[in-house]
Image (cartoon, rainbow, N blue to C red):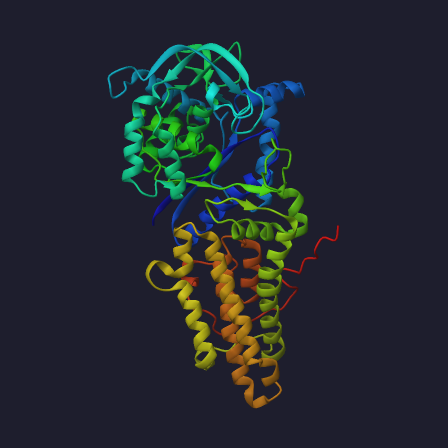
Length: 532
């Protein structure tokens, strides 16, 4: 059994998730489900980022302590992920005691270490620069765009203070070499080129502290309580902490040591992130790990943004689209399917209500839902709800064509077209291939017209064979869609007499054999376009 560890970013707790957050987390959940379906031992980590300026100021505005503020908001994120059928293995919070311990151990390791040139990894220095509270990042004068933050466009504050610095510049050459020698370490390739372009310029050292007189809400430096840890350093280390779960009766320090050991034995296979946090993950994070001598993640995948009317969907731009507002209309599985079907990983994608309706009607209501309804209703009507045993099902002609179509999706080296698309991060292609099978099966039924043949008792064996092959295509389509649409796929599979959760052995043609069939309401009803 292959181990597979994947992570999402951890999200600021100050507001509810929008579809940008939901996309990343649904993507991670679908990948985790697909890997489990294929027999892998999967660990899936997500959570909340709970320290820093933004959190402290938001708590103050609510009249709460920062801890009370995050304790109030973190359960909202858990509840929203649960509602979207996201099944993580750990929901980490950066206020978790074992995480605080991991950060302390990492800071001590940096303090004791030396750079490749023999100088200390950490040093103190005065700093003057422009600070963005929203992104919790310092910028130089040349970085600013019209005097504002180049990332979010919000005003910045000029700050001068003494801080601790990590000698990040000393690891520039090693990072460039690692990226070049490991194709696929940063995906898509355009993101890797972006990072290499960034590294062509001299790499500055990283300010990793904040003085407590300006920001008290953070993890204190173990040897210097006058400073708290820069929120990005704190946040990135969550991936190490999340490599294990705390055990009853275990001290936070013991859990932290176990987590570091587990990480070094098997670092994350993939960090799924949005492209806006590419630099922090591919430069800050990797150089910190290099300095500590800890294992490096195998892959960083920076996906594109969801856009609405040309702008990134986010709280800061004021155009946030909330998944909780969409699921009552489109269903959880409908939203999950739309987000993963519409976005080509690495590219931006435009959200609109109309595109959501059109996609779900075309693929789920008209194709999948209609096919499932037709097949099950005809099986109940013409076969008394019982499929024929496979040796009696006949074959040849269109049935053989349909079987070969399905087998191209699932058989051969690498598990077929669908599995290959998942491994290559072409999730939209994997889903499109399944819908191709659904469409081919609808066409097969139109050509075979079992409703016409059923009028002749002598043709019932042909009718039974046709419906068995069509039901088999429906079953296989549902099994392949399960990672993205667990509820809809489960209902389809149960109606065909199969377990709601498929196994790897189910991803082949020719499973159905005399099952009892149940017909019911359409698994995905047609949606009405918005009129205003």
